[in-house]
Length: 215
Image 1 (tube, rainbow, N blue to C red):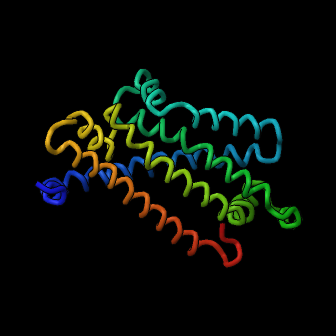
Image 2: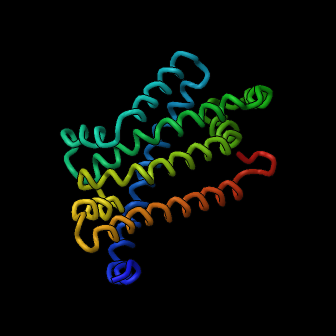
Image 3: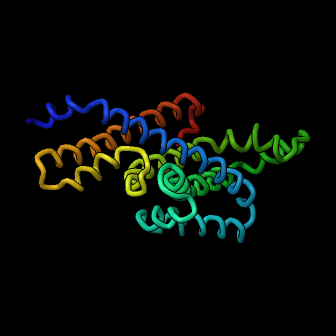
């Protein structure tokens, strides 16, 4: 049986795993934004807090994925919980770093003009700072998404959802006739998702960034 014949027989399983993989990455990316953007906003003007936040986020990124997923089993059990939290921690550094860079590169004259108009901090953040920093922030999200798509495969080790289950099944049945096919399906699915995500981010950047401000 060829690979494509094998795929024709279980394409629904592959599609289900692909969608689950994408949802897992989007959930973690969304949580990283909810945590990372406020942290960046609170610390980007002060050296010591900014360094501490970026340092902590960088430490998370250096922890081997199997170790981090395994450490989260004790407090969160198996399944989606440790999978989402681990991926969120891995996504924090590119999200925070790019948000900080985007905010720090803003023209001080623009900020002073907003203050002169009587804008408060939150209003200025929502209507001036974040829109101007958006291209750089979006680049951070793009990098984080690509990073998470690969790491999310490890979620299968803690019974998490996604294409990692196909890869793990293939490795666990190494030597059987179709083990390599399962592994290829999982890996190919991740590659396809990476291309799709990258195209989507490129489209969002093109549609939401004024000409001359693209990152």
